[in-house]
Length: 68
Image: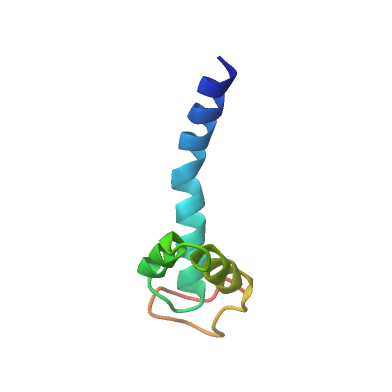
């Protein structure tokens, strides 16, 4: 029973997690396809984590205005 709840919660959080990551990549003027780097074993998750921590590009990008 507990494992079913964990699976349901995990599935419910996948789409919002991907959406937030793609929006963060767009803040850096990178394509959302960069998220696929996280599928590379061992280093992919670390690379995406570094992208998430970097400062976004100042001013507007091809994805819209800067949120700052």
